[in-house]
Length: 301
Ligand SMILES: [Zn+2]
Picture 1 (cartoon, helix red, strand yellow):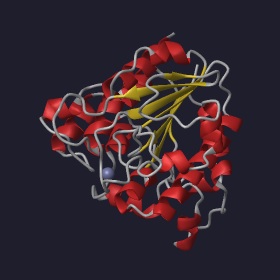
Picture 2 (cartoon, protein in one colour; picture 1 turned 45 degrees about the vertical axis):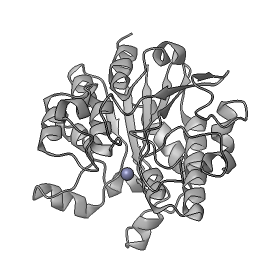
Picture 3 (cartoon, rainbow, N blue to C red; picture 1 turned 30 degrees about the vertical axis):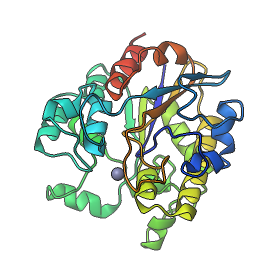
Picture 4 (spheres, rainbow, N blue to C red; picture 1 turned 135 degrees about the horizontal axis):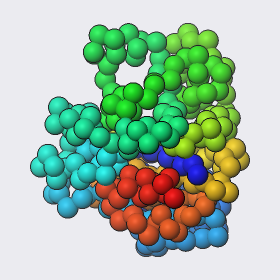
């Protein structure tokens, strides 16, 4: 039993309206093929096809205001309703109260304690490790959860050898900064991610360009990001052995799916499940707080 969780920052489930929802016009052949060629929208609700299940997942968590990244990610990776715990949606980075919640226990710490093989697929550049040593590294809430479990951060050697994936996927940005890593396609990055996931009970990859494209609101950038996401998914699906395993993608809040606003939305996020037992897991998920418990229950069976 294995789970690969791909976390896409800022990807909500939008309206069936091509004027405001860039997913409607995006080709995304891999993603659409999961749903019989259709692009799921807010109108569909729970969407179950022969290949995948989509669960509209509440990111507001009963707390007023727009959902934010640090509280959303903390909720996803702990199972605790983080905005309720600290009294507000907060982001993009975790404050001391959220870091305390993450350090107290999260899906990574619990799976490591249960002796599961766990991997965080993102590759970090050398300067990150220098800053980390000086306690100055800026980390997402996800990365804090990873660190609390003592799961290692992958580095340039892992990236070069295909045992990690850049948050920018194709390694182009690394090369522009002089790093000796191969230029790869998003599809190859997805295959590398799948290989890593085949060797671990639980693997996580964090992708944030979906959220930054939503904030920037530039149609060409959004189209490029959605094409990259789709190619990444294509590689993952080609490489991942999903017979007794599961690919789960989710997000912390909406943003990219509504270009009528240049920021986060109140929309539910699409939790997409591909592979074995997906309906069993899907039935447990209603809000971001249900994801960690659902995954842990799956890995226990
Ligand atoms: Zn954002």
